[in-house]
Image 1 (cartoon, rainbow, N blue to C red):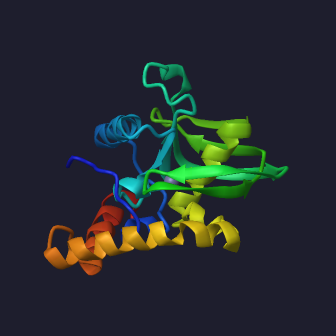
Image 2 (image 1 turned 180 degrees about the vertical axis):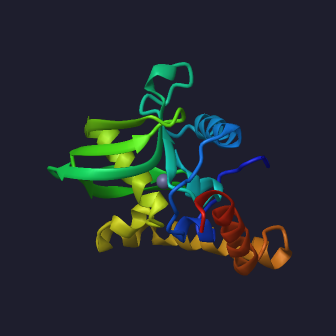
Length: 198
Ligand code: ZN
């Protein structure tokens, strides 16, 4: 498995509606371990497959943010949010939108089911920060960025930072240090074929 890295907006993987995984194997375990390592190195508390340019319905979280707190690590494979209750606004950030923070309204409580790395299905009832992280990461596998959910006023404040990121990304593509969108999409399609049966 190639070495994964966190991609930044506007990498096309962040707008990809990911497909369900059809197999769990050693290579997938390696991807998950790399995702945890990258998340801790970037001081995040959640990371979705789309953020490492993998078009799969999978994400990892550790709301404690502490890499030594293994009991707080959770892997969600083919997750589904079955219930959402309540509503609360709070600041969010994203490892794919570095230095950008803005308020997002989310459900305060969610019920989510998914498969873990051993292929066992589980269901969890999550509240507060756990619920927020899971909703943020679930959005990623749908190709949704948290900034899509920010109200126009606060969004206008961070728009210059978003535009900077866009410009940096397009400049790297012009220099040839980042592949073109078409090439990146072709890579995503190949990865999708390999593990989702489509
Ligand atoms: Zn994010």
